Amino acid sequence: MKKDLYEKTLVAYSQAMKAVRKGDYAKAKELFQAFLEKHNTEKEFVDRAQMYLAICENREKKETISLKTFEDYYEYAVYKLNQRNHGEVIKLLEKAKTQKPKEGKVSYLMALTYCQMEDTEKCLENLKDAVHKDKLFGTLAQNESGFEPLWEDKKFKIITKTG
Image (cartoon, rainbow, N blue to C red; front, side, top):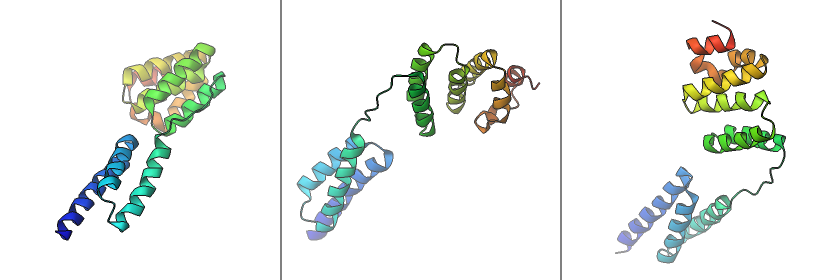
């Protein structure tokens, strides 16, 4: 009987931990809360579950960052790109673009983002726009490892003037 209860405890704890590893903190929080209600006798798990519950609650809170200027949106987009949060990057860059539509670095970063998303058409479209605004972006793209998958692409070479 005790062994069966221990195995159920282990399974429930493992399911909650799986949600944590996937980054689904809302689901993990829910699973840890249920775990603590049902399995509060297994001290070795309870302490860890409470700790992970606190982590999930902290991670689940939305970031509250005040973005107002072009630079705010652009810099935060770079931060989100480093986290590979592509959808958020595109939204942030669209807002930056409304503030400074002639700024080439927005199109360049959009191109890089679409390249990471493996959307070659949108990547090249934005890269072309960036190079049109400032030829320096063509040179940068030739040396940017993020564009490496396209270095041999005919359209990429035409846009960056390497082919």
